[in-house]
Length: 292
Image (cartoon, rainbow, N blue to C red; front, side):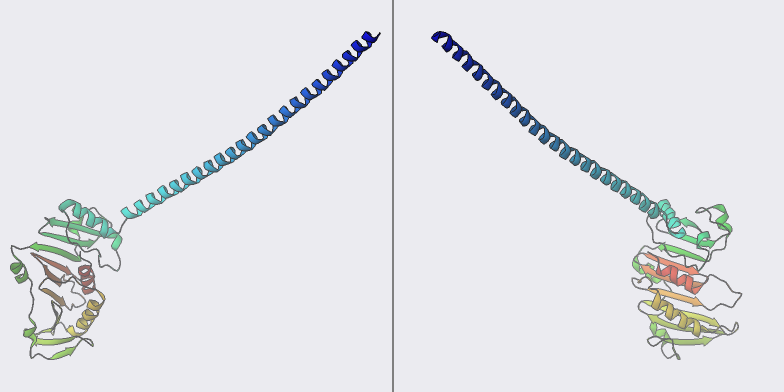
């Protein structure tokens, strides 16, 4: 009996130990699952962060791409604007492409009609003449129809063998030739000198390296004084090229029916002599001042 009781106790102990072992196993399994769940949450968070970063990166790239697209569009627009200039600018570029880099007026001197400005030229890089006219429509450079139009201005360059020869080609009048002539006040700073004879009237003066003369006529009743005063004001407003040694300006007072192209502005630059001639004094001065 005693042995049976011992065996029974032993069996009971084994059952208790087995139960405890099963409980511990379940706890470990649960703990293992909890740890797995924590890692899973962490991974999910990392993935969400990564997804957010990826989305942010994609958004940044999209914004960058959009900015680049806008920049390209803007650049294209600027390029288009850069190639779309005034009528005289486009024609000047065509002349330069034909005969090389040369001095040309950048201002057509017109108060109206600039869109129908036409130009033709002849000559080479060292000796050339440009003719400016306004037509019924804008024509190509040197188009046959342009030669039938009456130029309102011309611009010419001549090249000489020496600077002294170039200087001699300018019809410059020395200041000493005005000595003793009656004085005419043209502005607070400029005094002209009047000369008359043979039905002609002149007012002459000097500004810097320029000799200037305005011509009128007794016969045509054209008084040079008001034109001379107007010319002084123009020279204050528009800066003409600085002659290397000599420059000569010869202006004429026209009657209402006289439209001769005889407003002349000539200056020396090294071996070259440039001459701008126009029908209108204002136009001639504006064009000459813009020559570069």
